[in-house]
Image (cartoon, rainbow, N blue to C red):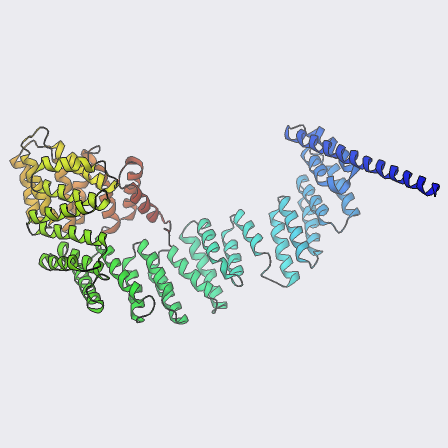
Length: 609
Protein backbone atom coordinates (compact mmCIF):
# COMPACT_ATOMS: atom_id res chain seq x y z
CA UNK A 1 0.00 0.00 0.00
CA UNK A 2 2.82 2.35 0.97
CA UNK A 3 4.61 1.51 -2.29
CA UNK A 4 1.51 2.33 -4.37
CA UNK A 5 1.05 5.64 -2.59
CA UNK A 6 4.68 6.53 -3.18
CA UNK A 7 4.32 5.61 -6.87
CA UNK A 8 1.32 7.89 -7.24
CA UNK A 9 3.20 10.76 -5.64
CA UNK A 10 6.11 10.30 -8.08
CA UNK A 11 3.70 10.12 -11.03
CA UNK A 12 1.99 13.36 -10.01
CA UNK A 13 5.38 15.01 -9.67
CA UNK A 14 6.48 13.70 -13.08
CA UNK A 15 3.32 14.89 -14.81
CA UNK A 16 3.58 18.29 -13.14
CA UNK A 17 7.16 18.68 -14.32
CA UNK A 18 6.18 17.50 -17.79
CA UNK A 19 3.34 20.02 -17.91
CA UNK A 20 5.62 22.81 -16.71
CA UNK A 21 8.21 21.86 -19.32
CA UNK A 22 5.61 21.97 -22.09
CA UNK A 23 4.28 25.25 -20.74
CA UNK A 24 7.69 26.91 -20.69
CA UNK A 25 8.51 25.50 -24.14
CA UNK A 26 5.25 26.85 -25.58
CA UNK A 27 5.82 30.19 -23.89
CA UNK A 28 9.35 30.37 -25.26
CA UNK A 29 8.10 29.52 -28.77
CA UNK A 30 5.41 32.17 -28.50
CA UNK A 31 7.96 34.77 -27.41
CA UNK A 32 10.33 33.81 -30.24
CA UNK A 33 7.52 33.96 -32.81
CA UNK A 34 6.44 37.40 -31.61
CA UNK A 35 10.02 38.65 -31.72
CA UNK A 36 10.56 37.18 -35.20
CA UNK A 37 7.49 39.01 -36.47
CA UNK A 38 8.76 42.24 -34.93
CA UNK A 39 12.12 41.78 -36.67
CA UNK A 40 10.33 41.17 -39.97
CA UNK A 41 8.18 44.26 -39.55
CA UNK A 42 11.22 46.42 -38.80
CA UNK A 43 13.16 45.05 -41.79
CA UNK A 44 15.67 42.97 -39.78
CA UNK A 45 15.18 39.92 -41.98
CA UNK A 46 18.36 38.07 -40.94
CA UNK A 47 17.48 38.14 -37.25
CA UNK A 48 13.92 37.07 -38.06
CA UNK A 49 15.18 34.16 -40.16
CA UNK A 50 17.44 32.93 -37.36
CA UNK A 51 14.50 32.82 -34.98
CA UNK A 52 12.29 31.08 -37.56
CA UNK A 53 15.06 28.50 -38.03
CA UNK A 54 15.11 27.89 -34.29
CA UNK A 55 11.33 27.49 -34.24
CA UNK A 56 11.41 25.23 -37.32
CA UNK A 57 13.83 22.86 -35.60
CA UNK A 58 11.39 22.60 -32.69
CA UNK A 59 8.31 22.06 -34.90
CA UNK A 60 8.93 21.44 -38.61
CA UNK A 61 5.37 21.49 -39.88
CA UNK A 62 4.14 24.53 -37.96
CA UNK A 63 7.03 26.83 -38.84
CA UNK A 64 8.02 25.55 -42.28
CA UNK A 65 6.19 28.21 -44.23
CA UNK A 66 7.47 31.11 -42.11
CA UNK A 67 11.06 29.82 -42.23
CA UNK A 68 11.02 29.07 -45.96
CA UNK A 69 9.55 32.50 -46.77
CA UNK A 70 12.22 34.17 -44.63
CA UNK A 71 14.90 32.36 -46.63
CA UNK A 72 13.26 33.40 -49.90
CA UNK A 73 13.13 37.03 -48.74
CA UNK A 74 16.89 36.85 -48.03
CA UNK A 75 17.46 35.32 -51.47
CA UNK A 76 18.84 32.17 -49.82
CA UNK A 77 17.06 30.18 -52.47
CA UNK A 78 19.30 27.10 -52.39
CA UNK A 79 18.71 26.68 -48.64
CA UNK A 80 14.98 27.20 -49.18
CA UNK A 81 14.98 24.61 -51.97
CA UNK A 82 16.79 22.05 -49.79
CA UNK A 83 14.35 22.70 -46.96
CA UNK A 84 11.30 22.31 -49.21
CA UNK A 85 12.61 19.12 -50.84
CA UNK A 86 13.20 17.63 -47.40
CA UNK A 87 9.59 18.33 -46.38
CA UNK A 88 8.21 17.03 -49.71
CA UNK A 89 10.11 13.78 -49.19
CA UNK A 90 8.97 13.53 -45.58
CA UNK A 91 5.30 14.43 -46.33
CA UNK A 92 4.58 13.49 -49.98
CA UNK A 93 0.81 13.76 -49.48
CA UNK A 94 0.96 17.36 -48.25
CA UNK A 95 0.84 19.36 -51.48
CA UNK A 96 1.56 22.61 -49.65
CA UNK A 97 5.26 21.69 -49.55
CA UNK A 98 5.31 20.98 -53.28
CA UNK A 99 3.64 24.33 -53.98
CA UNK A 100 6.30 26.09 -51.91
CA UNK A 101 9.02 24.21 -53.81
CA UNK A 102 7.50 25.38 -57.09
CA UNK A 103 7.45 28.96 -55.80
CA UNK A 104 11.17 28.68 -54.99
CA UNK A 105 11.92 27.45 -58.52
CA UNK A 106 9.96 30.43 -59.85
CA UNK A 107 12.02 32.80 -57.68
CA UNK A 108 15.18 31.20 -59.07
CA UNK A 109 13.91 31.78 -62.59
CA UNK A 110 13.68 28.06 -63.31
CA UNK A 111 10.17 28.15 -64.73
CA UNK A 112 10.29 24.71 -66.42
CA UNK A 113 11.08 23.05 -63.06
CA UNK A 114 8.34 25.06 -61.34
CA UNK A 115 5.87 24.11 -64.04
CA UNK A 116 6.84 20.45 -63.76
CA UNK A 117 6.19 20.50 -60.01
CA UNK A 118 2.80 22.17 -60.48
CA UNK A 119 1.76 19.77 -63.22
CA UNK A 120 2.66 16.86 -60.97
CA UNK A 121 0.42 18.34 -58.28
CA UNK A 122 -2.50 18.58 -60.72
CA UNK A 123 -1.82 15.06 -61.94
CA UNK A 124 -2.06 13.70 -58.41
CA UNK A 125 -5.08 15.70 -57.23
CA UNK A 126 -7.32 13.48 -55.10
CA UNK A 127 -11.00 13.06 -55.98
CA UNK A 128 -11.95 15.04 -52.90
CA UNK A 129 -13.70 18.42 -53.13
CA UNK A 130 -12.29 19.75 -49.85
CA UNK A 131 -8.70 18.79 -50.69
CA UNK A 132 -9.01 20.28 -54.18
CA UNK A 133 -10.26 23.55 -52.66
CA UNK A 134 -7.43 23.51 -50.14
CA UNK A 135 -4.80 22.98 -52.87
CA UNK A 136 -6.27 25.77 -55.00
CA UNK A 137 -6.26 28.07 -51.98
CA UNK A 138 -2.61 27.23 -51.29
CA UNK A 139 -1.75 28.22 -54.84
CA UNK A 140 -3.74 31.44 -54.43
CA UNK A 141 -2.06 32.32 -51.12
CA UNK A 142 1.33 31.84 -52.73
CA UNK A 143 0.34 34.37 -55.40
CA UNK A 144 -0.11 31.79 -58.15
CA UNK A 145 -3.62 32.46 -59.44
CA UNK A 146 -2.87 30.67 -62.74
CA UNK A 147 -2.49 27.31 -61.05
CA UNK A 148 -5.21 28.08 -58.52
CA UNK A 149 -7.63 28.38 -61.46
CA UNK A 150 -6.17 25.29 -63.14
CA UNK A 151 -6.62 23.35 -59.90
CA UNK A 152 -10.32 24.21 -59.71
CA UNK A 153 -10.84 23.35 -63.38
CA UNK A 154 -8.94 20.07 -63.00
CA UNK A 155 -11.02 19.36 -59.89
CA UNK A 156 -14.20 19.71 -61.94
CA UNK A 157 -12.89 17.19 -64.43
CA UNK A 158 -11.88 14.73 -61.71
CA UNK A 159 -15.22 15.03 -59.92
CA UNK A 160 -17.24 15.14 -63.17
CA UNK A 161 -19.16 18.23 -62.04
CA UNK A 162 -18.93 21.46 -64.04
CA UNK A 163 -20.95 23.41 -61.45
CA UNK A 164 -18.33 23.16 -58.69
CA UNK A 165 -16.05 26.02 -57.57
CA UNK A 166 -17.92 28.78 -59.46
CA UNK A 167 -17.64 31.43 -56.76
CA UNK A 168 -13.86 31.25 -56.21
CA UNK A 169 -13.31 31.14 -59.97
CA UNK A 170 -15.50 34.22 -60.43
CA UNK A 171 -13.55 36.02 -57.70
CA UNK A 172 -10.20 35.23 -59.31
CA UNK A 173 -11.32 36.14 -62.82
CA UNK A 174 -12.65 39.41 -61.43
CA UNK A 175 -9.36 40.05 -59.60
CA UNK A 176 -7.43 39.39 -62.82
CA UNK A 177 -9.93 41.51 -64.82
CA UNK A 178 -10.54 38.59 -67.16
CA UNK A 179 -14.01 39.86 -67.97
CA UNK A 180 -15.26 37.25 -70.39
CA UNK A 181 -13.99 34.34 -68.29
CA UNK A 182 -15.84 35.84 -65.34
CA UNK A 183 -18.95 36.29 -67.48
CA UNK A 184 -18.79 32.70 -68.73
CA UNK A 185 -18.42 31.46 -65.17
CA UNK A 186 -21.48 33.44 -64.09
CA UNK A 187 -23.45 31.89 -66.94
CA UNK A 188 -22.25 28.49 -65.79
CA UNK A 189 -23.32 29.17 -62.20
CA UNK A 190 -26.71 30.64 -63.12
CA UNK A 191 -27.67 27.38 -64.81
CA UNK A 192 -28.27 25.82 -61.39
CA UNK A 193 -28.30 28.95 -59.18
CA UNK A 194 -30.61 31.54 -60.80
CA UNK A 195 -30.88 33.43 -57.50
CA UNK A 196 -27.45 34.92 -58.25
CA UNK A 197 -28.86 36.88 -61.22
CA UNK A 198 -28.71 40.32 -59.57
CA UNK A 199 -25.20 39.71 -58.24
CA UNK A 200 -24.15 38.72 -61.75
CA UNK A 201 -25.68 41.87 -63.23
CA UNK A 202 -23.99 44.13 -60.68
CA UNK A 203 -20.55 42.55 -61.08
CA UNK A 204 -20.72 42.40 -64.87
CA UNK A 205 -21.78 46.05 -65.13
CA UNK A 206 -18.92 47.08 -62.83
CA UNK A 207 -16.36 45.17 -64.94
CA UNK A 208 -17.58 45.82 -68.49
CA UNK A 209 -16.11 48.97 -70.00
CA UNK A 210 -18.16 49.61 -73.10
CA UNK A 211 -20.33 48.31 -75.90
CA UNK A 212 -17.61 45.95 -77.16
CA UNK A 213 -17.68 44.01 -73.88
CA UNK A 214 -21.46 43.76 -73.96
CA UNK A 215 -21.42 42.55 -77.56
CA UNK A 216 -18.99 39.73 -76.74
CA UNK A 217 -21.08 38.85 -73.69
CA UNK A 218 -24.24 38.79 -75.81
CA UNK A 219 -22.64 36.12 -77.99
CA UNK A 220 -21.89 33.97 -74.93
CA UNK A 221 -25.40 34.53 -73.61
CA UNK A 222 -27.19 33.67 -76.85
CA UNK A 223 -25.17 30.47 -77.06
CA UNK A 224 -26.26 29.63 -73.50
CA UNK A 225 -29.91 30.33 -74.34
CA UNK A 226 -29.68 28.04 -77.35
CA UNK A 227 -28.38 25.22 -75.15
CA UNK A 228 -30.82 25.96 -72.28
CA UNK A 229 -34.00 27.30 -73.94
CA UNK A 230 -36.14 26.63 -70.85
CA UNK A 231 -33.89 28.55 -68.41
CA UNK A 232 -35.76 31.82 -67.78
CA UNK A 233 -32.78 33.36 -66.00
CA UNK A 234 -30.87 33.68 -69.27
CA UNK A 235 -33.83 35.33 -71.00
CA UNK A 236 -33.98 37.83 -68.13
CA UNK A 237 -30.25 38.41 -68.41
CA UNK A 238 -30.60 39.08 -72.14
CA UNK A 239 -33.20 41.75 -71.38
CA UNK A 240 -30.75 43.31 -68.94
CA UNK A 241 -28.02 43.18 -71.58
CA UNK A 242 -30.24 45.04 -74.05
CA UNK A 243 -30.91 47.71 -71.41
CA UNK A 244 -27.17 48.24 -70.83
CA UNK A 245 -26.79 48.80 -74.57
CA UNK A 246 -29.82 51.11 -74.57
CA UNK A 247 -31.52 48.79 -77.05
CA UNK A 248 -34.84 49.51 -75.41
CA UNK A 249 -37.09 48.14 -78.14
CA UNK A 250 -35.27 44.81 -78.07
CA UNK A 251 -35.49 44.73 -74.26
CA UNK A 252 -39.24 45.26 -74.40
CA UNK A 253 -39.70 42.70 -77.19
CA UNK A 254 -37.80 40.14 -75.14
CA UNK A 255 -39.83 40.84 -71.99
CA UNK A 256 -43.16 40.72 -73.83
CA UNK A 257 -42.16 37.41 -75.41
CA UNK A 258 -41.32 36.05 -71.97
CA UNK A 259 -44.63 37.33 -70.58
CA UNK A 260 -46.54 35.57 -73.35
CA UNK A 261 -44.56 32.40 -72.80
CA UNK A 262 -45.25 32.38 -69.07
CA UNK A 263 -48.83 33.63 -69.49
CA UNK A 264 -48.22 35.94 -66.53
CA UNK A 265 -50.04 39.07 -65.33
CA UNK A 266 -47.63 41.50 -66.99
CA UNK A 267 -45.61 42.31 -63.86
CA UNK A 268 -42.21 42.05 -65.55
CA UNK A 269 -43.32 44.23 -68.46
CA UNK A 270 -44.70 46.78 -65.98
CA UNK A 271 -41.41 46.90 -64.06
CA UNK A 272 -39.44 47.24 -67.30
CA UNK A 273 -41.63 50.16 -68.36
CA UNK A 274 -40.73 51.99 -65.16
CA UNK A 275 -37.04 51.46 -65.98
CA UNK A 276 -37.66 52.72 -69.51
CA UNK A 277 -39.24 55.88 -68.08
CA UNK A 278 -36.20 56.40 -65.84
CA UNK A 279 -34.07 56.29 -68.98
CA UNK A 280 -36.44 58.59 -70.90
CA UNK A 281 -37.44 55.89 -73.42
CA UNK A 282 -41.03 57.09 -73.31
CA UNK A 283 -42.33 55.69 -76.61
CA UNK A 284 -41.07 52.22 -75.77
CA UNK A 285 -42.59 52.42 -72.28
CA UNK A 286 -45.93 53.46 -73.78
CA UNK A 287 -45.87 50.38 -76.03
CA UNK A 288 -45.21 48.21 -72.98
CA UNK A 289 -48.13 49.67 -71.05
CA UNK A 290 -50.35 49.17 -74.11
CA UNK A 291 -49.42 45.47 -74.08
CA UNK A 292 -50.48 45.16 -70.42
CA UNK A 293 -53.74 47.01 -71.04
CA UNK A 294 -54.40 44.71 -74.00
CA UNK A 295 -54.25 41.68 -71.69
CA UNK A 296 -57.54 42.82 -70.14
CA UNK A 297 -58.59 43.67 -66.61
CA UNK A 298 -55.95 41.75 -64.70
CA UNK A 299 -53.86 42.84 -61.71
CA UNK A 300 -51.78 45.43 -63.60
CA UNK A 301 -54.57 46.77 -65.82
CA UNK A 302 -55.44 49.86 -63.76
CA UNK A 303 -51.80 50.68 -62.83
CA UNK A 304 -50.91 50.44 -66.54
CA UNK A 305 -53.83 52.71 -67.50
CA UNK A 306 -52.56 55.30 -65.03
CA UNK A 307 -48.87 54.95 -65.88
CA UNK A 308 -49.38 55.20 -69.63
CA UNK A 309 -50.95 58.60 -69.03
CA UNK A 310 -48.10 59.64 -66.74
CA UNK A 311 -45.59 58.51 -69.36
CA UNK A 312 -47.31 60.48 -72.10
CA UNK A 313 -47.23 63.50 -69.80
CA UNK A 314 -43.50 62.98 -69.23
CA UNK A 315 -42.99 62.82 -72.98
CA UNK A 316 -44.78 66.14 -73.40
CA UNK A 317 -42.85 67.71 -70.52
CA UNK A 318 -39.59 66.68 -72.21
CA UNK A 319 -40.70 68.44 -75.39
CA UNK A 320 -40.59 65.25 -77.47
CA UNK A 321 -44.11 65.46 -78.84
CA UNK A 322 -46.23 66.42 -81.83
CA UNK A 323 -49.70 67.96 -81.82
CA UNK A 324 -51.18 64.52 -82.42
CA UNK A 325 -49.60 63.32 -79.15
CA UNK A 326 -51.57 66.00 -77.29
CA UNK A 327 -54.83 65.00 -78.94
CA UNK A 328 -54.15 61.32 -78.26
CA UNK A 329 -53.42 62.00 -74.60
CA UNK A 330 -56.61 64.04 -74.25
CA UNK A 331 -58.59 61.11 -75.65
CA UNK A 332 -56.85 58.68 -73.27
CA UNK A 333 -57.88 60.80 -70.28
CA UNK A 334 -61.42 61.06 -71.55
CA UNK A 335 -61.61 57.29 -72.12
CA UNK A 336 -60.36 56.69 -68.58
CA UNK A 337 -63.00 59.01 -67.13
CA UNK A 338 -65.70 57.40 -69.27
CA UNK A 339 -64.72 53.94 -68.00
CA UNK A 340 -64.26 54.80 -64.32
CA UNK A 341 -66.45 57.88 -63.93
CA UNK A 342 -65.71 61.33 -62.54
CA UNK A 343 -65.26 60.92 -58.81
CA UNK A 344 -62.73 61.36 -56.02
CA UNK A 345 -60.78 58.30 -57.25
CA UNK A 346 -60.31 59.76 -60.72
CA UNK A 347 -59.89 63.39 -59.68
CA UNK A 348 -56.13 63.15 -60.36
CA UNK A 349 -56.88 62.31 -64.01
CA UNK A 350 -59.43 65.12 -64.26
CA UNK A 351 -56.79 67.56 -63.00
CA UNK A 352 -54.16 66.42 -65.51
CA UNK A 353 -56.68 66.57 -68.35
CA UNK A 354 -57.61 70.11 -67.30
CA UNK A 355 -53.95 71.20 -67.30
CA UNK A 356 -53.44 69.61 -70.72
CA UNK A 357 -56.48 71.41 -72.10
CA UNK A 358 -55.56 74.74 -70.52
CA UNK A 359 -51.84 74.98 -71.28
CA UNK A 360 -51.28 72.80 -74.37
CA UNK A 361 -54.59 72.59 -76.23
CA UNK A 362 -55.74 76.10 -75.19
CA UNK A 363 -59.22 74.86 -74.33
CA UNK A 364 -59.51 77.06 -71.28
CA UNK A 365 -63.31 76.86 -71.09
CA UNK A 366 -63.18 73.05 -70.94
CA UNK A 367 -60.39 73.19 -68.36
CA UNK A 368 -62.28 75.66 -66.17
CA UNK A 369 -65.41 73.48 -66.24
CA UNK A 370 -63.44 70.35 -65.33
CA UNK A 371 -61.59 71.98 -62.44
CA UNK A 372 -64.84 73.38 -61.03
CA UNK A 373 -66.26 69.84 -61.10
CA UNK A 374 -63.31 68.57 -59.03
CA UNK A 375 -63.75 71.34 -56.47
CA UNK A 376 -67.40 70.26 -56.02
CA UNK A 377 -66.59 66.55 -55.58
CA UNK A 378 -66.85 64.87 -52.18
CA UNK A 379 -63.87 63.01 -50.74
CA UNK A 380 -61.08 64.56 -52.83
CA UNK A 381 -57.77 64.53 -50.94
CA UNK A 382 -57.04 67.99 -49.47
CA UNK A 383 -53.67 68.37 -51.24
CA UNK A 384 -55.16 67.49 -54.64
CA UNK A 385 -58.11 69.80 -53.97
CA UNK A 386 -55.72 72.67 -53.18
CA UNK A 387 -53.71 71.98 -56.36
CA UNK A 388 -56.90 72.03 -58.42
CA UNK A 389 -57.95 75.37 -56.90
CA UNK A 390 -54.55 76.83 -57.79
CA UNK A 391 -54.86 75.39 -61.31
CA UNK A 392 -58.29 77.00 -61.57
CA UNK A 393 -56.67 80.28 -60.54
CA UNK A 394 -54.14 79.78 -63.35
CA UNK A 395 -56.99 79.25 -65.83
CA UNK A 396 -58.63 82.47 -64.64
CA UNK A 397 -55.30 84.20 -65.27
CA UNK A 398 -55.20 82.76 -68.80
CA UNK A 399 -58.73 84.08 -69.31
CA UNK A 400 -57.76 87.60 -68.16
CA UNK A 401 -59.59 87.29 -64.83
CA UNK A 402 -56.79 88.18 -62.36
CA UNK A 403 -59.13 89.13 -59.52
CA UNK A 404 -60.77 85.68 -59.46
CA UNK A 405 -57.31 84.13 -59.65
CA UNK A 406 -55.94 86.04 -56.68
CA UNK A 407 -58.98 85.12 -54.56
CA UNK A 408 -58.38 81.42 -55.18
CA UNK A 409 -54.64 81.67 -54.47
CA UNK A 410 -55.37 83.49 -51.21
CA UNK A 411 -57.96 80.88 -50.26
CA UNK A 412 -55.45 78.05 -50.68
CA UNK A 413 -52.72 79.97 -48.83
CA UNK A 414 -55.04 80.54 -45.87
CA UNK A 415 -56.33 76.95 -45.87
CA UNK A 416 -52.87 75.32 -45.67
CA UNK A 417 -50.77 77.53 -43.38
CA UNK A 418 -47.02 76.82 -43.03
CA UNK A 419 -46.96 74.19 -45.80
CA UNK A 420 -45.40 73.94 -49.25
CA UNK A 421 -48.92 74.25 -50.69
CA UNK A 422 -49.35 77.57 -48.88
CA UNK A 423 -45.98 78.79 -50.19
CA UNK A 424 -46.84 77.78 -53.74
CA UNK A 425 -50.14 79.68 -53.54
CA UNK A 426 -48.34 82.73 -52.14
CA UNK A 427 -45.78 82.56 -54.96
CA UNK A 428 -48.50 82.40 -57.62
CA UNK A 429 -50.15 85.45 -56.08
CA UNK A 430 -46.80 87.28 -56.10
CA UNK A 431 -46.25 86.28 -59.74
CA UNK A 432 -49.74 87.53 -60.60
CA UNK A 433 -48.90 90.87 -58.97
CA UNK A 434 -45.71 91.00 -61.07
CA UNK A 435 -47.64 90.19 -64.26
CA UNK A 436 -50.05 93.06 -63.56
CA UNK A 437 -47.28 95.54 -62.67
CA UNK A 438 -47.88 95.75 -58.91
CA UNK A 439 -44.19 95.33 -58.05
CA UNK A 440 -44.34 96.60 -54.46
CA UNK A 441 -46.90 93.98 -53.46
CA UNK A 442 -45.01 91.30 -55.40
CA UNK A 443 -41.75 92.16 -53.59
CA UNK A 444 -43.44 92.07 -50.18
CA UNK A 445 -44.81 88.58 -50.86
CA UNK A 446 -41.52 87.35 -52.33
CA UNK A 447 -39.53 88.61 -49.36
CA UNK A 448 -41.38 86.12 -47.14
CA UNK A 449 -40.96 83.29 -49.64
CA UNK A 450 -37.18 83.66 -50.06
CA UNK A 451 -36.76 82.07 -46.63
CA UNK A 452 -39.33 79.35 -47.36
CA UNK A 453 -38.86 75.67 -46.62
CA UNK A 454 -39.18 74.56 -50.25
CA UNK A 455 -35.92 75.09 -52.13
CA UNK A 456 -37.70 75.24 -55.48
CA UNK A 457 -40.19 77.89 -54.34
CA UNK A 458 -37.46 79.84 -52.51
CA UNK A 459 -35.33 79.82 -55.67
CA UNK A 460 -38.21 80.95 -57.90
CA UNK A 461 -39.03 83.67 -55.38
CA UNK A 462 -35.40 84.80 -55.29
CA UNK A 463 -35.17 84.96 -59.09
CA UNK A 464 -38.36 86.98 -59.41
CA UNK A 465 -37.39 89.24 -56.52
CA UNK A 466 -33.98 89.95 -58.08
CA UNK A 467 -35.61 90.65 -61.44
CA UNK A 468 -37.91 93.24 -59.86
CA UNK A 469 -35.23 94.81 -57.64
CA UNK A 470 -32.57 95.01 -60.39
CA UNK A 471 -34.95 96.74 -62.77
CA UNK A 472 -36.68 99.19 -60.42
CA UNK A 473 -33.64 100.51 -58.54
CA UNK A 474 -32.67 103.10 -61.18
CA UNK A 475 -35.97 103.18 -63.08
CA UNK A 476 -38.32 103.93 -60.18
CA UNK A 477 -41.30 104.05 -62.51
CA UNK A 478 -40.64 100.44 -63.51
CA UNK A 479 -42.12 101.11 -66.94
CA UNK A 480 -39.60 98.95 -68.83
CA UNK A 481 -40.19 96.11 -66.40
CA UNK A 482 -43.98 96.50 -66.78
CA UNK A 483 -43.64 95.98 -70.52
CA UNK A 484 -41.37 93.00 -69.90
CA UNK A 485 -43.89 91.55 -67.41
CA UNK A 486 -46.64 91.85 -70.04
CA UNK A 487 -44.42 89.91 -72.44
CA UNK A 488 -43.79 87.33 -69.71
CA UNK A 489 -47.54 86.89 -69.22
CA UNK A 490 -48.01 86.40 -72.96
CA UNK A 491 -45.31 83.70 -72.89
CA UNK A 492 -47.15 82.09 -69.96
CA UNK A 493 -50.30 82.08 -72.12
CA UNK A 494 -48.25 80.69 -75.06
CA UNK A 495 -49.16 83.72 -77.21
CA UNK A 496 -45.66 83.70 -78.61
CA UNK A 497 -45.97 86.08 -81.57
CA UNK A 498 -47.42 88.87 -79.42
CA UNK A 499 -44.81 88.17 -76.74
CA UNK A 500 -41.93 88.49 -79.22
CA UNK A 501 -43.29 91.79 -80.57
CA UNK A 502 -43.55 93.13 -77.02
CA UNK A 503 -39.97 92.09 -76.20
CA UNK A 504 -38.68 93.67 -79.39
CA UNK A 505 -40.35 96.94 -78.39
CA UNK A 506 -38.65 97.24 -74.99
CA UNK A 507 -35.22 98.37 -76.22
CA UNK A 508 -36.81 100.77 -78.72
CA UNK A 509 -39.16 102.37 -76.19
CA UNK A 510 -36.76 102.23 -73.23
CA UNK A 511 -33.17 102.48 -74.53
CA UNK A 512 -30.46 101.73 -71.97
CA UNK A 513 -32.71 99.50 -69.83
CA UNK A 514 -31.20 96.79 -67.62
CA UNK A 515 -33.27 93.89 -68.97
CA UNK A 516 -30.85 92.63 -71.64
CA UNK A 517 -30.23 89.11 -70.25
CA UNK A 518 -33.88 88.77 -69.18
CA UNK A 519 -35.06 89.59 -72.70
CA UNK A 520 -32.62 87.05 -74.14
CA UNK A 521 -33.97 84.36 -71.80
CA UNK A 522 -37.56 85.17 -72.76
CA UNK A 523 -36.69 85.04 -76.46
CA UNK A 524 -35.17 81.59 -75.93
CA UNK A 525 -38.34 80.38 -74.20
CA UNK A 526 -40.46 81.67 -77.07
CA UNK A 527 -38.33 79.85 -79.64
CA UNK A 528 -38.67 76.66 -77.59
CA UNK A 529 -42.46 77.04 -77.44
CA UNK A 530 -42.43 77.49 -81.22
CA UNK A 531 -40.21 74.37 -81.53
CA UNK A 532 -37.46 76.48 -83.15
CA UNK A 533 -34.86 74.71 -81.06
CA UNK A 534 -31.75 75.68 -83.03
CA UNK A 535 -32.84 79.33 -82.94
CA UNK A 536 -33.19 79.15 -79.14
CA UNK A 537 -29.48 78.40 -78.83
CA UNK A 538 -28.48 81.88 -80.04
CA UNK A 539 -29.93 83.94 -77.16
CA UNK A 540 -28.94 81.26 -74.65
CA UNK A 541 -25.33 81.24 -75.86
CA UNK A 542 -25.32 85.04 -75.70
CA UNK A 543 -26.34 84.86 -72.03
CA UNK A 544 -23.49 82.43 -71.31
CA UNK A 545 -20.94 84.54 -73.21
CA UNK A 546 -21.95 88.03 -72.09
CA UNK A 547 -23.77 87.50 -68.77
CA UNK A 548 -21.91 84.53 -67.26
CA UNK A 549 -22.22 85.78 -63.67
CA UNK A 550 -25.78 87.05 -63.83
CA UNK A 551 -29.13 85.58 -62.87
CA UNK A 552 -29.88 83.38 -65.89
CA UNK A 553 -26.41 81.99 -66.64
CA UNK A 554 -26.83 78.51 -65.13
CA UNK A 555 -30.40 78.27 -66.50
CA UNK A 556 -29.07 79.07 -69.96
CA UNK A 557 -26.40 76.37 -69.79
CA UNK A 558 -28.91 73.77 -68.58
CA UNK A 559 -31.47 74.71 -71.25
CA UNK A 560 -28.83 74.42 -73.97
CA UNK A 561 -27.83 71.00 -72.68
CA UNK A 562 -31.46 69.90 -72.65
CA UNK A 563 -31.97 71.11 -76.21
CA UNK A 564 -28.89 69.30 -77.49
CA UNK A 565 -29.92 66.11 -75.69
CA UNK A 566 -33.64 65.96 -76.43
CA UNK A 567 -34.27 68.03 -79.56
CA UNK A 568 -31.08 68.40 -81.59
CA UNK A 569 -29.69 64.88 -81.06
CA UNK A 570 -26.18 66.05 -80.19
CA UNK A 571 -25.52 64.13 -76.99
CA UNK A 572 -21.75 64.86 -76.81
CA UNK A 573 -22.46 68.61 -76.68
CA UNK A 574 -25.20 68.00 -74.11
CA UNK A 575 -22.79 66.02 -71.94
CA UNK A 576 -20.21 68.83 -72.05
CA UNK A 577 -22.83 71.37 -70.98
CA UNK A 578 -24.14 69.23 -68.11
CA UNK A 579 -20.52 68.91 -66.99
CA UNK A 580 -20.25 72.71 -67.14
CA UNK A 581 -23.17 73.02 -64.70
CA UNK A 582 -21.43 70.61 -62.32
CA UNK A 583 -18.04 72.35 -62.46
CA UNK A 584 -18.91 76.04 -63.02
CA UNK A 585 -22.23 76.33 -61.16
CA UNK A 586 -22.04 73.93 -58.19
CA UNK A 587 -24.67 75.88 -56.22
CA UNK A 588 -27.16 75.87 -59.10
CA UNK A 589 -30.66 74.54 -58.54
CA UNK A 590 -30.01 72.36 -61.59
CA UNK A 591 -26.98 70.59 -60.11
CA UNK A 592 -28.70 67.31 -59.16
CA UNK A 593 -30.58 67.05 -62.44
CA UNK A 594 -27.39 67.88 -64.34
CA UNK A 595 -25.54 65.09 -62.55
CA UNK A 596 -28.30 62.62 -63.39
CA UNK A 597 -28.36 63.64 -67.06
CA UNK A 598 -24.56 63.60 -67.27
CA UNK A 599 -24.40 60.05 -65.87
CA UNK A 600 -27.11 58.92 -68.26
CA UNK A 601 -25.25 60.31 -71.27
CA UNK A 602 -21.98 58.85 -70.04
CA UNK A 603 -23.63 55.44 -70.17
CA UNK A 604 -24.31 54.82 -66.49
CA UNK A 605 -27.49 52.88 -65.77
CA UNK A 606 -29.83 54.77 -63.45
CA UNK A 607 -31.53 53.15 -60.48
CA UNK A 608 -34.21 50.74 -61.49
CA UNK A 609 -32.31 49.73 -64.59
